[in-house]
Image (tube, rainbow, N blue to C red; front, top):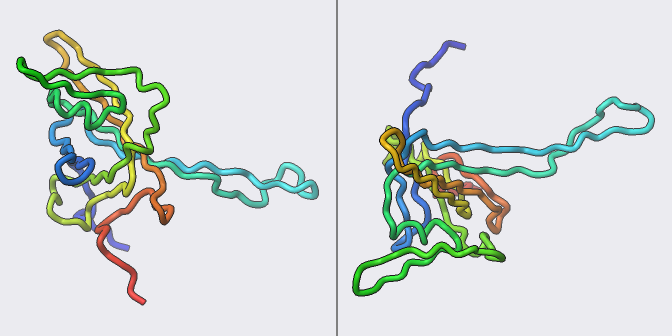
Amino acid sequence: MAQDFSKIEIGPAIVEYGSGGTMVTFETTIGGVVLNTETTYREQKTDQTGETIVDKRITGRNVSVTVPFAEYEIDVIPKIMAGAEVVTGTGGSKVLLKTGVGVSLLDTAKIAVIKPLAHKTDPDYWLTLPLAFSETDLSYSFNNENERITNVTLRSTPDEDGVILILGDDTITATP
């Protein structure tokens, strides 16, 4: 088989989280957007074969996307952080970060789409988490050496069909 160097993909991506008026687009990142899948397994053994593994079963699969968001936008924080709320008054707006104790992240889950910049308009190259909740942490350094980063981790949870990740165009349907 001959090598096809045109199939080697590199480069940054943007991430769209949510849809409509509540969608947040992460366009400026520092450190790169990273998608990870993690599959857990259980080794199957029998008494008759001792410690020899005779099979291995999948016990679960998780998908996460880390987004080191570098744009400071106060109105975005409540859209990506459970337990945060924006308060608007005569003097402007502020965000209140509350403890969030007991808040279900599943209730905040939305679609997330990773779009490589080189293929921003080609859904064949997109990665879609049909249902993902956000785990957001702030890491704001106040010095001349580091940018203020909002660390967002989007964790996929199964949709109604058990799908946690779609590689490629999510509008494609199976032909009978």
